[in-house]
Image (tube, rainbow, N blue to C red; front, side, top):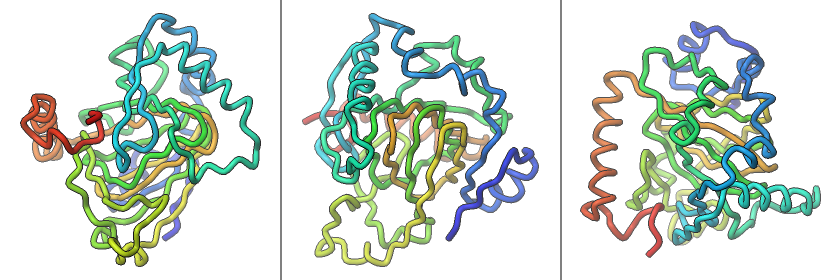
Length: 274
């Protein structure tokens, strides 16, 4: 299946052609008037909060054992800049291991003044949960699907998505591993074990490159994995209508509270080291 690429769609076009039909779409031009499009650089974030400590994931925590570190935001950005300067253009990224990732970062909680830099107005009237992703080339998020509809905005860098429709679920082996807001696959697509997961050979994914200034809509239930081809700054803006909020968001928040309290999947998650 090919993913449509459209320029500056109206809200009506987006909802009628894609949201209501549960179809992904790559959109350009929407971010052209956002201050963040030019403002959000690594240099800007490096000087935003020099003393701030952030939670860094190491590698693909959705499939590997979680490794977590804490670094100063400025120190972390400097690591990204150094890695990008040293990286050769032909460097392979598919087998990248141990790459540090500022993932699932609640950016507007820590920097509320940045809210005016973006405009996710397509989600007007819906509950919104914006989450940032900042990292070097080679960050990899394994196969999963999100319980919320997602507008993924790429501000800096470039990422490769591989998407699988909900009909591929029988081939992707749903995992019992816990991750907030997501359902995971047992299959590590970087090195699939076809003896354990033979049906994965039948899964047909579609690759989409998301460049700086573009937004990818990923509907709820669409499996995807994400590889950063260049050092990137991105924001996922998850959205829930009233019905979705009652059915999915509120139970998810309750489940996460139980998890943090050690009462739900305490030792099988993507967020806590052993």
